[in-house]
Structure formats: structure tokens, C-alpha cells
Image (cartoon, helix red, strand yellow):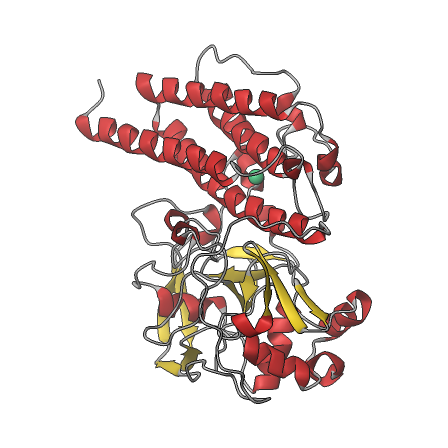
Length: 427
Ligand SMILES: [Fe+2]
């Protein structure tokens, strides 16, 4: 017989499941079926694929294992919408996802409903603890894909000559006064907050969900350090560009300088120059740089963040410094729930740790001492990517607030630019 505590856990999880599933549909509600087919770079996926793959996750790792008599929606979907789980099944090449004109969108939406009914049925009859853990994992997985859906769509719209607008902007900030070269307009001064360092506990401290890569909690020694209270702004980054930042090899790591030359980088992704100067493509349309001077710069690679920090006379924080400063802080900031979909102007009233842009850290993405991936194919979720990637912290303007916490570790290859990735300085 279930206890009332178990019943409450299942009710809470049912509500969370419903909320997360509905949000994916809400985020894609304004898109045309054609919008949802575009895959404009190999790292990205079409919105339609995200909707199908997130249903696949619940079907494959929850319903097939834990709901007796579960009937597959389509016998091809278990391999068709597998992303990278080698231990589960074969799967199509990632770059082919834009070719999935079939199954039709309408069929994908029915697939989602079929899976929703299965999870609801499982929760009604009473799921065992491992099934509940998998449903919570599936909800967190879907939140990751909500962020990816938006960052992938932003790139898709940027490559469309019409430059479509995803979301009409909220009241725009008044354009700051034109500032003279080398001065960061109306930005609050860059203030550094000192921390004593010493012996710090790093990693997730319950209660609540975390990914396997946030464990085990362990001790790290930190030298005294200081973190900037706000992110680097577009105006400050433009100063770096105007000072020849992209043409001074001494500022760059070797791999970063190679990336600059090979990719022809001379500005962050989504910045384009024309007769009127620089403009920046956002999910709220194309905006002149002058309107964004006090907003955090985003869509820079780790290499650009590192070069900027060197130019400015500072460095990037380690992931441990960031976490030591963020632990215990309320998860507040410009996250997906603000409905803004783009970074907001900086303020210096409090230490800004969450939202606007992920911050690149100087830390390579590695397992913590004693790290143990999840059992079975789910062990491929995080652990197999612990090579050649850097850690980002803090969440962005398209990260669901319920998804982020101080121990959360995001990770991307150092040349990645299509995520909302920005710069926080340390010294
Ligand atoms: Fe996934």
C-alpha cells in the first residue's frame, strides 16, 4: 500500500511532468511546420525532432521498462528518435534530422499524446521509485531540449534571409547615450567581489534532482579570488574588437587563434556589420548594437571569452570558484520564465550569478573524484562527453528556472558559439 508521502511525491511529479510537457508545445506554438524542419548547423536539431526525441526518452527509459503492457506508438520510433545512446539501439546520423519530413508533424504530436497518456497511467497506478527517478530525469531532459529548441531556432532564423522574429520584444530599453570610443557607455562600473577561498565543498547537496555529473560532492581548495559582479557587456566587447582583439595572436590560445583564422571570426555570432554599423540578431529580431550596449555579450566561444579576459587584464573563473560564489544564492535572474528570450541590460545591485548567459569557465569538463555514471544506456547521458569540452555555469535567458542550480554543469566544445554563452571575469 502506498503511504501518503509516496502519493504526494507522485502527485508533485505528475504536475511537474504536465507542466514541462505543455511548455515544449507552448514554445513551438508560433512556429510553422516548415520552421520546425530546419537544421541550419550540424550541432543543431529541428524543433520537430526535439518534440519527438523528448517523447522518445520517456517511452524508451520509462514506459518500455516500467508500464506493463505498454504498446509502442510506432515500431520505428525507438531507433528513429534515439539521439546518441549506443547501448539502446542504432540511430540515424545527426546531420540528417532535417530530412525527417516523415513522420509528419501531426503524427509527432500524436506520439507525444500517446506517451503522455502512458506516463499519466503509470503515475496513477503507482510507479516504483526507479520509474519516478526516470520520470524526473525525463522532465529535466526535456527542459534541456527546450533550451536547445530555442537556440537551434535562433540559428535557423538567422540563416533565413528574411530574419524572422520569434518573439516581439518587450518594452525596449531606452537607447543609451552614444559613448566615446573606449568607454562602456552607461554600464555600471565593473566591480569585483572578493572571496576568501579555502576548503570548499563542490557538487550537489540534496534534496532535489541533480544529474550524475554533479556528484559526488567533494572538497576543493581555492586560493583567494574575486568575481565580477556582472557579465561583460556588448559595448565592452566592442572595445576589444575596436582595439584589434581579433588580429592580435598574443591574446589567443593556439587552438583559439586557429579557430579565428579558419572561421574568419571578427565578432560574436549573430553580429553583422553594415552601413549603419553593427547590428545583432536576437530572438526578438535584429537590433542595432547601440540598443544593446549595456546588455551582456553572448554567443562567444570559450576561445573568445578567454582572449577577451586576457585583453582586459583578468581571467575566466574556474567552475569551482563560480560554484563557491553561487551556492546558497537564490536562483534569480533573466531565465526562460521571464519571457524575454534575450539577455537584459546589466545592473550591479547584486551579484548576478544566474540567467542572461551561461558563463564559460576555465575548467575542462571532467568527472568529479569518484564519479559514477547512471546504470545501463542512461550512463551515456553525460559521462561519455568528458573529453574535449569546457564547463559553463549559471543558465541563460532560455534556461527554465526550475532547471538551474548552483551545482549545475553545462558543457560544450570550446569553439561552440550558438548557445547563449557569455563572459564573467575573475581575478
Ligand atoms: Fe536528448
